[in-house]
Length: 130
Image 1: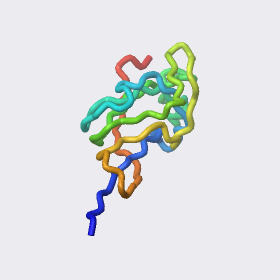
Image 2: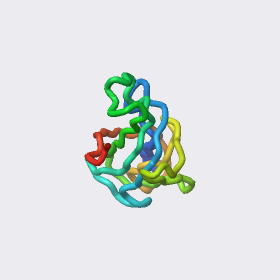
Image 3: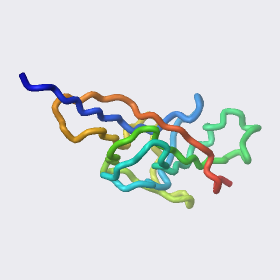
Image 4: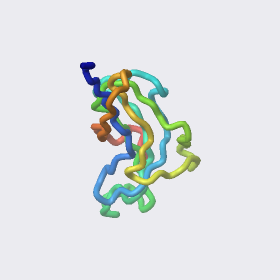
C-alpha cells in the first residue's frame, strides 16, 4: 500500500482587519511569487478602506485610508494570483473585497491529497501611514 502525502495549501485572502472593514487595495507584494517565506515575514502592504476604523472620530481625517503591513505566520512557498492589480498611494490600483483569495502558501510540493485552509497573519499600521 502506497503512503498518502498531504499537500497543505493555505489560501491567502484579504483579511478583515476589523469588523467594519470591507475592502483593500494592494500597494505592494513584498515577496515575489514562488518565494519561500518564513513565519513573521512581511508579505503585503495594503491600503484599507476608511471603514477599517469604524468610529470616524478615531480617524486622522474623514477619508483616512490606513496603510497596513501584513506578515505571514505561515511557512512555505507563496504563489500570488496572476491577475492581481498592484496600485500605489496616488489612488491607482483596484479595490478588492475582504475575503477575496489573492494567492496561496504551499507547504509541500508533493501533490497527492490537497487540504485547503486559511492562512494565519498579523497586521500593523504602516509607519508611513499619513
